[in-house]
Image 1 (tube, helix red, strand yellow):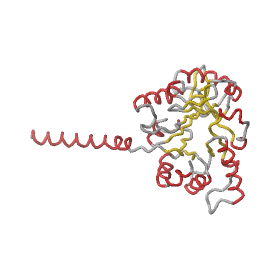
Image 2 (cartoon, one colour):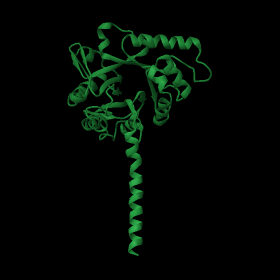
Image 3 (cartoon, one colour):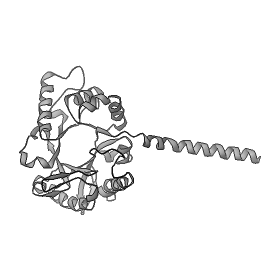
Amino acid sequence: MQHQRLKVTFLKTIFLVLLALPPLISSAQVIPLPNAFAHNDYFHDRPLFDALDNGYTYIEADVFLKNGKLIVAHLNPFFKESRTLENLYLKPLQKRIAESSGTVYKGYNDQFTLMIDIKNNADETYAVLKKVLQQYSKILSRYQNGVFIPGPVSIVISGNKPHNAIMSETDSFAFIDADLLQSSGPISVRHIYTMASCKYSKLLNWKGDGNMPAPQKRRLTWFIAEAHKGGKKVRLWASPENKDVWRELLSCGVDLINTDKLTMLKSFLIDNASIYASAN
């Protein structure tokens, strides 16, 4: 009887160990994806961590300023005061970087970007955001006296953008997502723009059936080339969640594929590594 109980206990132990192994294996096999952009990341079951587990290097969070706090929410910031930008993103990233030899992904030294989409007043929100970012200065990229100083995480602002406030600063921890359709701005202010985005439907109506129409392709590649001249990475948001569309966007030079389907895009990018490597 004693032998039987020991056998059952042993089998239970082995079962529990096997249950624990998949997360360990998957975390060891995470491949950082330089073209992967997690749209509305906070909608996922585990904000930030679902994206990190899938290797995403660009993550977006919508932010409202409410009662002096930066609340992560898309439409309604009420009753969500614990879901702050710090709690969901900045603190976990700081902890991860400290535990990963100074990078978000151990051994990966390329750019990792947290995009903050400001949903209400740009200047008031940025004034609060600026103070918060200063507390995390050791992990952030910055622009200082005409020089870009890279850090493990770059902050890019979209939505309601505080252009004037950031342009007036000689030392900033935040950059701006430019409008792709107006991305060939003056050289003197290019330092504040690291990305250029627009809604997919403003450039294209092709859904992935057959070849992309030639006039649309010419229009797309022209805007991409203009953005790249200014050192900006290109993203089209609200694009079809379609592998044929993704493949064509990458081949045209789009840098970032915007998605809500994390595992689907991850698999696509890994399976088409030669395409997205040539896009960078």
